[in-house]
Length: 150
Image (cartoon, rainbow, N blue to C red):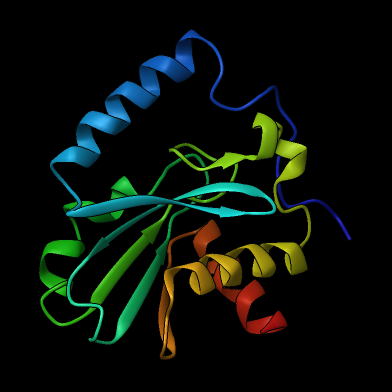
C-alpha cells in the first residue's frame, strides 16, 4: 500500500520550524480553551478542545500544509455551544503533532495506520459516545480511513 505521508527531514528542527511554532503557540493561546498532547506509538499528537464533553462530539481534521488553527476562529466559537469540539493536528504536518523521534517515517504510513492513529487519539481522549467527523481536504481522507478500518 502506498505511503500517505511525505518523507522529509526531521520534524520541528531548525530555524524555520522555530519561527513557525512560535507563531502557532501565540495563536493557539487565544484561540482554544484547552490544548494537550496525546501520545501514540506514532508520536505525540496536539489536540485542542472547546465545549462541554457531555455533548455530542465533532472531531475536526485539517488539510495538508495547514493545522488545527484553521478551525479555531471559524467554527469552534459557534459550534462549541452545542457540541464538544476537538481539533487535531495531523501527524507529520504543520502544528505541534510530532512523529516519534521527529522522523516522518515513524508517522502513519498507510490508510490502516492512519485509522489506528486517529482511533488511538480518540481512545486517549476518552470518548464514550460516537463522534461526528468533519474533515477539510486531507482531513476527509482521514475520516474515510477511520470509516474503512473501524
